[in-house]
Length: 198
Image (cartoon, rainbow, N blue to C red; front, side, top):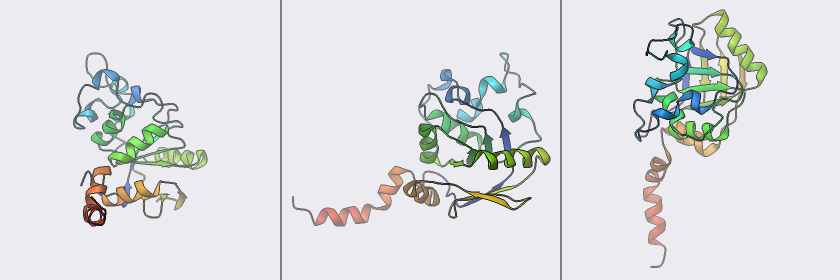
């Protein structure tokens, strides 16, 4: 499998209430030299996380030990800018398996779906409730149920549905990337090929 199956994720969340976070902020261009997916998490939000001398910026959320979890909660228009898939790689490699926002740039959203990060688009009102839940309790737990396409604030029981392409949903539930999907159909493809004239 390309990555772990995504069925139900229960986790605390890291809040990043900043709008229009673009892919250059997620992973600066100078770190795009590698072609493998590993190692990008070290430079996720590099210029926001670290000073020029490499020391951590204490006021940046990822450097605050109070917050942790496999869910990143971003402001509106998350992942805008260039189409670099390395931005999704960095999010995944850091350890996030889900990003919640009220709006995603389409290319970033699709790049996430291709590698096992679930982009959950909710209403602005529900996003505000998510941020408030984290503010009230940094350890607040959230449940993201892919099969039911629903995200729930466990402390209050409030939930909201989200949309996802059925093909991508099936792939994530199985832990497939596009190549895995085709390989899984290998028998059917071979059977079909046998019925075709040469």
